[in-house]
Image (tube, rainbow, N blue to C red; front, side, top):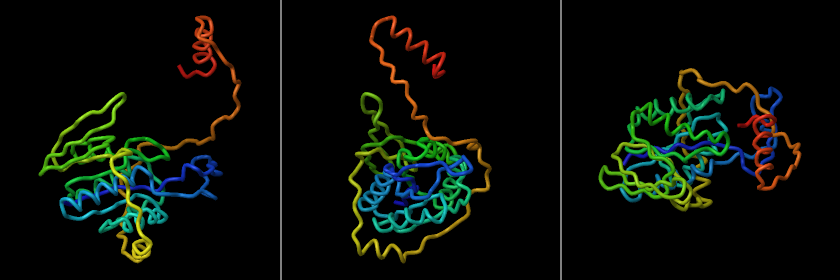
Length: 248
């Protein structure tokens, strides 16, 4: 089985985030970056599929050379190959998805596995975009996965319950927490991974579809108004949300 796993480098959730001087991106100074947690489940699932069905696992990331840290972690876990799609401009989700789709057309994987979303922008967009670009079935938020021949059966988390989905290979799957227990690479494997080759290729030539106009930290000023469940208080809360907060 030819397995492609997609991973990304994201800020640690415990990091204190600031905005850069240009007001359009975060300030990386003092920020620790890690493998996106949901992508750990994706890599582990790819490795388990390889152990069960044979084949190979390739891990790909779109980002700057700093993203090689993600690929080294994947290699230490057991990935057979690693590919960096070098994107010096931190392009939008469409460029990321297009770059992955172009590479996937060359690799022709039986299955492409993502984490369900990245924890930085939380856009939940790239797996669906890649599926559309490749015209492949896409199964999201997968917490159980079995493959029998070319038939894929997945259990997906939905609000208030579970959904069972079947499709055929090739397909795209995005991993939810609970799909598996990611392995921790051993020190010798970590050291070996540092000397393993990482293939580099250029990012897609397509143009970004979105632009970050500005980025600001949340306003920490709060009025701390407390309302009861009386009809009058509910009406006042709705009015404030509509007229002052302008969120409804």
